[in-house]
Image (cartoon, rainbow, N blue to C red; front, side):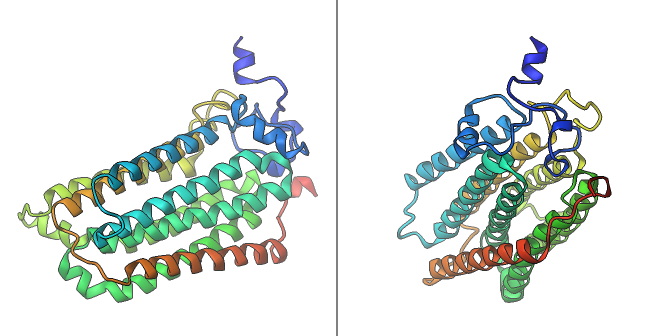
Length: 327
């Protein structure tokens, strides 16, 4: 019975898979390659080592849709300009999660599908990061910080967001082999940390004020602390491949680090949305502009279009690197 749970029928072990499709610490449960697309679509409801990666995202999409419905009943997304950024952020969360779930469903077809789908997944991930930076400046910053850094911050944030997509795509094609995953994820984690430091500039003054005994922003900082905690835990689970590297084969179906990463990522998004709602309810987010929807729509669309083009260029001029063992 245990063997059937952890090594589902009609799946392959790692040694039967191309090395570029293997994951560190994952031994069993790989879906068969070069099957019809319908085979991978049907696998949504079957046990394999991507099942819970898929379902953690599907559940996250339902949660985000329900939260949009809930908040739409409480505020007027059409007329209330203070809610526009929140709506854009929620849409970006749904978009990035949808792209990711598509990648997890279909990437096992072959190596080309695997790399192409995950490169597009990265564009969705950084659209979410871009939207996170926007709610940081428009909702979480205090008036003094907003007036002082908003213009420079938006430019730097756009550069980091665009550069993050390019870096993730190049790292995937150059260090995508399982033997290089630690190097790739270590470099990416360093870049994400630098980007997070940039976003943290929006709330640094609130922390400084609180450290000096002023309790004006104490409730807001409590919300930010929870966001930071889940963000860090998600980053650690993404980069460390724990617990599966210490117990190969034991967490192939459920409990692997990428599933944990998905859960922390979703919890982080939920906390971000709740923190935004708190700031709006307390009147701490007075920044708005009649052209704000146009700015967000144009900036997110342009970022998405440019990164999609870059994905195609990277796939053409940065061929997938194999390990020496495969040559």
